[in-house]
Image 1 (spheres, one colour):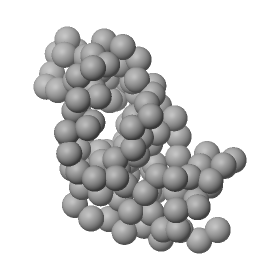
Image 2: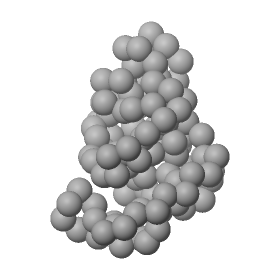
Image 3: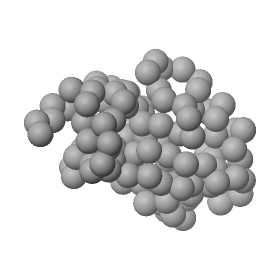
Length: 117
């Protein structure tokens, strides 16, 4: 299949929306938060997030079709609890599921230790 990725500041728009998700089913994810940096020893690093190439497309049942506080609120509600993310990697052009535990006790800034846009 053909994949066109348009990178815009904070968002990833994937066209067409009928991409194959993890090789099996059609994806409905079109927007997400770009991971710009992952801090050492952070929950983001432990979960395997990759700077520059990864986009957080979904967290639990929450997609990110518009910019807002949705991700921050979701992370706060799941502090110290396992949270399922769907992440898209622009280098491999694949989706993957990631489990992460937001925490403010890992020794750095933020609940995930990542910088997103």
